[in-house]
Length: 411
Image (cartoon, rainbow, N blue to C red; front, side, top):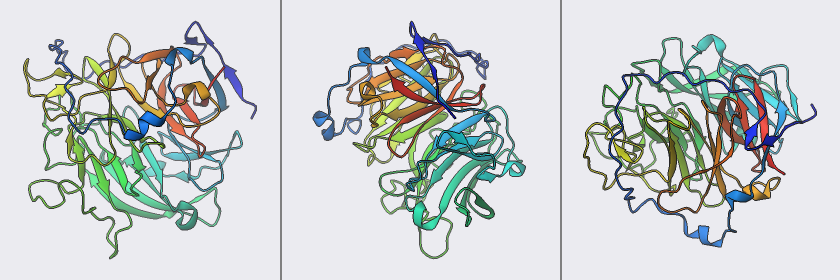
């Protein structure tokens, strides 16, 4: 397929915009702003000082259509196997391959019979094992027909473009009390462990108080060892912060999350970036060192930088966002990546993210300290459901409504 370019004109892309769904739960008055006092663990990597300066004002963004005809694409990733293929998850339960700019007709995997899709449910995450080229193992996160979260392992067949649907091995099942706030992203960290993002279970305002409850896996970032010996589905890394605490789930790496919609690790520094969808006021982006364990991201004591449940709350020891935006500019954040490719040099060293409702794309210097307002580099880019990287670090986004995958480049 020949790439088609969508030009930015006056900061707005010439693509359709999908409206935002109403916020769930009753409206909540804007709480008072709390000064962003960051926890000591929330600091940029020492390697940041060696990077070239990132200038958001120099970014003139363009989007190249590299694939279309997809059914509600929700995820983009690569297998790290040297094939240069993109793997795209469709909400209905299929994984599709984009190879050389062409959408392969036969799905890589079709688990649609196992999946309930619609709203915030469906096939939500895909991660390939770091040694996928040798072992053919990959992992998915989906909402099953009972509405619960399943994290499962599959293997590729003898055909590299087709997985073995009978190879499923379930790792985790998590009961979901409501059909929203499923989280769903999965990714391997620089330490080789599998990270799993879960939402708070939904319902608006965290009615079950799951975000701060260490006895549940909801509202968390989990970290598990999928290479554990002894035939167990997974093991608990010994340095997980609650591995030896009987009153907390040992899988938990971090907590206090509402509905994390995409997290990523910076290829250059290993820093962890998490975008968390807000309730009624604020969408946030958090950055911490990858090795920082046991962190509390604040929900539902806080929403972004503000107290949520009460007018005055304790902020010390909680991770506060490095950037974000109010619901005047959007209503559902889509987390992205720190750009480390070569096709768009103006983006080098910038964290790129967007909003599903407004279609805005923002950038932020990845070395930023404290809270920094993001810079909008595009508006009305469509229903941005995800960002993803190829093997070379080039950056892509999905337009859910149009069924397109687009590469982010610069003029």
